[in-house]
Image 1 (spheres, rainbow, N blue to C red):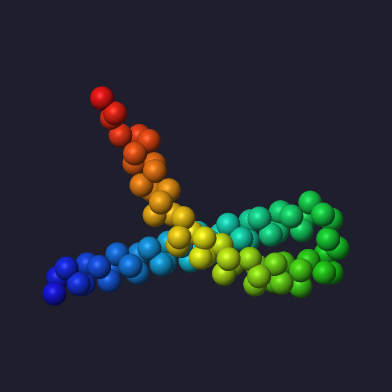
Image 2 (cartoon, rainbow, N blue to C red):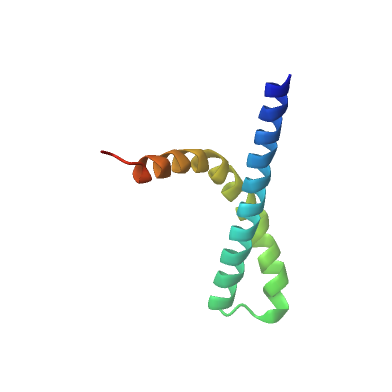
Length: 82
């Protein structure tokens, strides 16, 4: 039973991390692109909301799929190969 509880906590941790990371990433990139492209302030909120609505689910799925692979690759790259 303890192992099952640990797995649930681990899954929740991974999902929460992916959710927060994707929201932060999408917001920073979206607002940056909109500001670089000189979107008028009167349209900024609408354009920002549209862009994060489209991009957030995509980035969330990508993080959920790619992050475990990147963590394993990172561990392999930094481990002692002697």
